[in-house]
Image 1 (cartoon, rainbow, N blue to C red):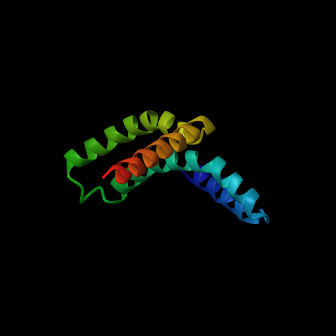
Image 2: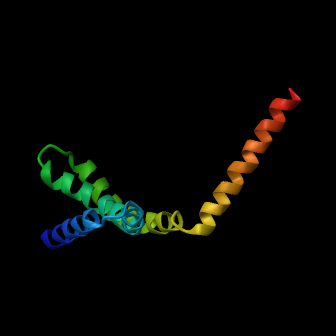
Length: 108
């Protein structure tokens, strides 16, 4: 855990040393999906360990189960959100929805 934390601290430090905002955003987009998955995995486990005495056994079992199921399940979804094809498809759907909303407003 210490090695992982140290590596993420060094990554964040490297991101802040990038001077151009555009380049910084591109670098952050590269790291964001991985950081989300790591947070989904480690945060519940750390909370369970920190507050072990206060959390009922059933909640701990559910928490441990979710940490083994959620990251692999969400992994494809999070990485798909970054693809250009997905972004184009969402934009098309939003435009179509906006056009239908305008047409329905005009007809009433």
